[in-house]
Amino acid sequence: MEKRPFDQLGVSAEILKAVAKMGFEEASPIQTAVIPVALTGRDIVGQSSTGSGKTAAFAIPAIERVEPARRVVQVLILCPTRELAVQVAEETGKLALFKKGVREVPIYGGQSYDRQFRALEAGVQIVIGTPGRVMDHMDRGTLRLDALKLVVLDEADRMLDMGFRDDIEKILSAVPEQRQLLFFSATMPRAIQELIGRYSRDPAWLKIEAQAQNAPQVEQVYFEVDRRSKLEALARLIDVHDFRYGIIFCSTKIMVDDLDEHLHSRGYAVDRLHGDLSQAQRTRVMEKFRERKFEFLIATDVAARGLDVDDLEVVFNFDLPNDAEDYTHRIGRTGRAGRSGRAFTFVSGQEIYKLQSMIRWAKLRIRRERLPSLDEVEEARANVFFERIRATLEAKQFKPHDRMIDRLLDQGYASTDICSALIHLLQGGPTTPAVVAPAKVERVASPPPGNAAVPGRSPIPAAGDGRAPRGTPADGEEETTPSAPSSERAPGKPKYDRPARTGREAGMTTLFFNVGRKQLVTPADIVGKIAGVTRLPADVVGAIDIHQRHTLVDVAESAAEVVLAKLAGIKLKGVAIAPARAGDETS
Ligand code: ADP
Ligand code: MG
Image 1 (cartoon, protein in one colour):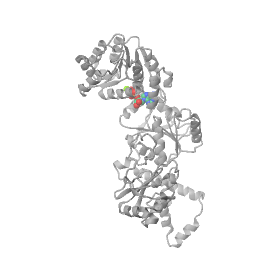
Image 2 (tube, protein in one colour):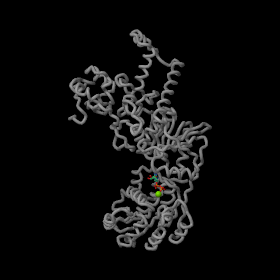
Image 3 (tube, rainbow, N blue to C red):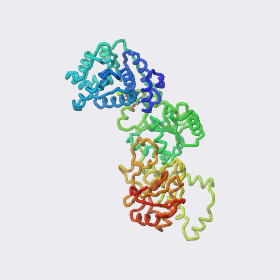
Image 4 (cartoon, rainbow, N blue to C red):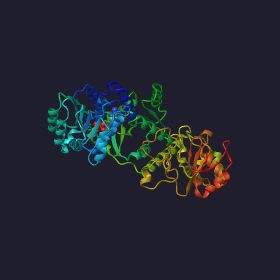
């Protein structure tokens, strides 16, 4: 099934700009098929599966046909439901963003007529509505269709199922003879074919068949995940399966960048690939990935196309692919050469319908599973950790630390206790930040202490690994709300709306320190300084969030005044500290 870049479809510069802004890297097959033909003015009957991008397929030619200077209705798009009308209007608005003077309005039952009158009077050119409400406006004389050039029937089969046949026929009989008609339907029952026969002239039939082959070696699973919990779900699956090599697909460049940043700050070794990177950058990333210099590649479909790797353990569809063909393409990168692979797909909310239709169309063999629970993740991490210790001992891959151990033994500690204490520290126990230096400072905005312990992915069964640094959140809401700090993000908000710093414990307060990454401050510096100067135990310090020029430090409320008083004026990395309660700081 052919796909082409948008700039080969004969669309205007304004549309090219808009699709780029929307993150569309190339036209989908139905768009590739429909747009050039629709631009010639010919009637079209388009048929393709849900989620294949039909909206832009008709909205782009619709926008192109509008003469902005004429403030009359020139395009009418009929949709079965108000939700769809609103959705189509939104997408049309985005696509028309750079077309000066082109305006669209959804009209549907349930919304006040007043607002709709005003919009219509103001001279919108594109009306998107349900057949019932469109008829109402025609009857009232508030919607004039005599300048209409283009009519679109979106989801025609559904409109007929919903009993709109009479309305549709009335509308189609009332519009000018010389108009173009674009007809979209997932199925072509007889009633639809009759409508087409009656109202369109020599239409081009453009049907996009889903014809994905299954990849039998690939175990395919999907998970229904709330949108904002996807990151947490991803981390759990990686940890439970101890995956070390895979691709994570996202639908847009923005999502790729976001996820890259979030996974980095959780300590995963990842890199990204998308169309905004230069060819040289892309080549370098692919090379590094082939050489396994990092574990997970986050990519868009298009960017990953040139990538030739065949021993992936897993492919994640962090975002659902656009169609079954992309799906097959993506998962075909694992399970090659007789090896077994896994494909994990996330669906959230309404996407389940899209996935189900892909499953039907392409006869995918994909089963549903529930996400591993926190306990399962802990257990898996513990097992992995155990195995690593054993392997390290077997292989004798460690430097002896006899002196330190002897000193501890001399002081009367039992060897089992010493080991337990070390594991506790590695797990991100309360005093961790004082003991370990953070890894990967330049890219990690502000690693939670538990995470900072180990470069790359922590193989440690850390209770707080990547989640609330102090203590494991109780089951329920909290559990699925990831807390990787995102306060240092460059422009653009994370897609999944996670609070930047969740889970500050009761009894903790946040202090502002006027030193940061610029001074190469580490969590250990902060905790060390606080503990050293105040003589308070290090565990009065909680989460530490290091920014470029300042640091946010959670401390026990009971210790806050002491810390504020004793640390004022003390030098840290050559800077006199002026601590303040966060929010009070003057600088
Ligand atoms: P359909 O009407 O065929 O079910 P939609 O038009 O609703 O599909 O599109 C499904 C999703 O795919 C939407 O979120 C849309 O923004 C997105 N989409 C459409 N075209 C593209 C494209 N060329 N590249 C990336 N995403 C696209
Ligand atoms: Mg649609």
